[in-house]
Structure formats: structure tokens, C-alpha cells
Length: 322
Image (spheres, rainbow, N blue to C red):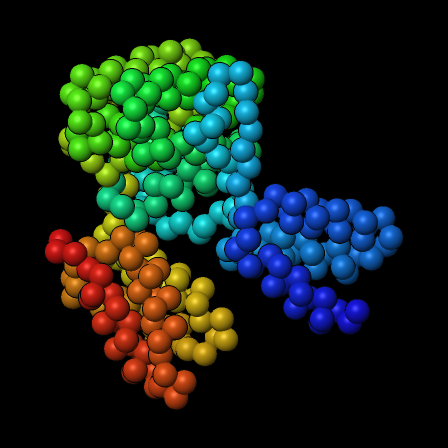
């Protein structure tokens, strides 16, 4: 098979978005086999695509144990996104990495901030930076309509976390869905039992050397103060200035301008001007969607000014009042 044909097939496989651990294992097998046979070019090519930062491919793995908590968890392996954050947040994340590596007793962390500000992406970054496995608990899945079952599910999860045999990150996504949102529970006593089970679960992790628990919410102001006191560290992600938004816009513009069709300096200046006009609050997720839409819907014969206008329109449609 000619190299260009193999490369096109390989590109399709690793960028297809199929959730399969077997594909990842197969890529590793090909690299090992190619190295053994002296096919360094093939090994290098597969390795390049396997570790491509722009892969949309990821896989989920599930496991079981004696306590039943893994029933509500999944492990995701996916590329680390390039995150642009301000100096203050960067220092906080670096300090957090040091504290975790030092086993300093910092093992319960809360990420707060609006949706799309990078909380989940930062958890993935931390897992990769610390070389730790990360299991995600989507808290809404813990909620059960059967009376008494939700607190039992919460207890199962914390039993599993407490018995982990190696240092692991456990990420509670949308933690407010079990400790804040009353609409999930018709019975107030049931809600109280769930909150109590959750707080006791966090308390049970005091002194744990293996369990690193990170929770995320965009409703932290509505959470019970007694619950918030369970966390060793709270990090807020609502830190995006207009200058930072301009840099993030440029990052995604570079990502989607795969043919290098546009002058980067010209668009950098344009983004600076656009955000200096204070068009409104935009999260990184909203910015990414705006740039993606602009490249998807731009006419084939469109001018540079057409692209600028379309990007401006997409950003304005997604912006919220500051």
C-alpha cells in the first residue's frame, strides 16, 4: 500500500470520533510491530496521528468492583486541549499540581464558573499533567426516581473512591444536580438524605492518599455553605478578559484555518479591535462554536472582509451582556 493511501486511511480512523478502546490498542500494536520490523517511517506516522492534538477520537472504558460505584463512572482517554488562561488561574493550577504531587492532603477541589469556561477541559489537562487516570461521575445519572435509591447510589460511588488502590482523579461533573437542584427531588426528606450522603462521602476522604476528587459547578452561589466547606481548594474559572478572549479566538481561528488561507496578523489585529469594542461576555466554548460555524458556512468565493463579518456576526449572536 502506498504511503499516501495508508496515511489517508489512518487519518480517517483516528479522526472518526468512534468510541473504541480497541482502536487505541490496535494503533499501539501497529507501532510496536513496525518498530520490530524496522519500518520506522510507518511507526512514526502512526505515532503522529495517535498523538495528534486535534483528534476528535476518544474512548470510554468502564470497570466494576465490590462496591458498585464504577457503575456510575466512566474513564475517558482523549487529547488535551490547548487552554489559554490568565496568569492568576495558571498559578493556581500549577500550585494545585504541586500540592497533589506532594501528598499534602489537598484532595478535594471545587471548580466554579459559567458553562463553557474550561472546567472539564482543565480536569483532563490535570490528569495528563499528573499522569493519573481520571474517572468521570455525571452526577445527574445518580438521581433515581425510586425513593431512597439516590443516596444509595451516592454511597456506592464514595465507597469505590475510598477503596481506590492507586492515586486517581475522580471528577464529579455538575455536582449541583445532587446537592442543590430541588427540582430533581419531589420529597424534601429525600433531598436532605442525598445532601447528607454526599457530605459524609467527602468527609470520608479526609487523609486519603489515593483519591483526588474534583467537582465542578456553575451554581456555586446556591450551594449549601456546609457543603462548600468540605473542599480544600476552590478555583474560579470566570476569568476571561477581552484581551484573553481575543487570544482564544485567534487560537481557534488557527485551528480551523487548515489551509492557511488567511493572514494571521491581519486577523489578530481584527480580533483585538473586535473585543476592544466590548461585544459582550463569551466563554471559550462559545468562541470555538462561533469560529467553527464561520468556517463551515463561509462561501467558497468569499473575501477576507466577508470572513471578518461572518465571524463578528457569529460572536455577537453568542455573546452575553457583561
